[in-house]
Every structure is written in structure tokens, then in C-alpha cells.
Image (cartoon, rainbow, N blue to C red; front, side, top):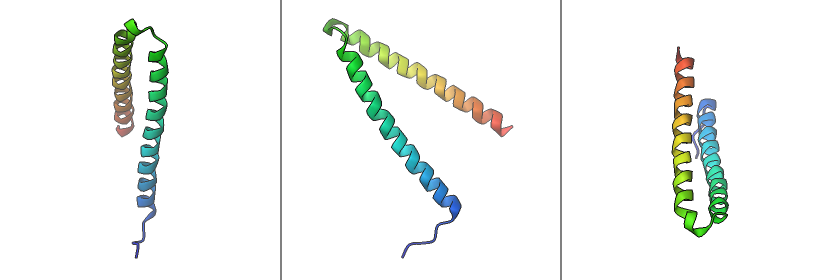
Amino acid sequence: MFPKLKSENVTVIYSYIDWILTIIYFNSIKRKVQGKTLNSLPKQWYPDGIASTQTIQQVAGAIGIAVMVLLLATNLQ
């Protein structure tokens, strides 16, 4: 009924499942932290708080991608 899986395929499947679960877990934690952070601000500062958190997310994402590309480039040589 089910095809036999090679060990390489199983490793890839487990890696994908692990990555998906990690992203779901990280996003659930991030949402709670951002909500509590923005709720601690006075209402007149909500736009500034949202803008600053979005800016920090963009900068952190750019740094993370740069580090990942650097690591991949050095490992390929």
C-alpha cells in the first residue's frame, strides 16, 4: 500500500515537518509578545509602537538572511 521510503527521503520529510512546526511555534510566541508589548503602550503611541516593531522585524530579517547567505557561501567553497 505505501511505498518504501529511503532513509534520505525520511530525513527530508522529518526536516520539513520540523521546520513547519518551528515556524508555527515561533509565530504563536511572537504574536503574544507583540500583543503584550503594544498593549503596554498608551493609546496615542500605538502607531509609533507598530512602526518600530515592524522596522525591527525587517532589519532582523535582513540580518538573518545576510548571515545565512554568508554561511552557505563559505561552506560551498
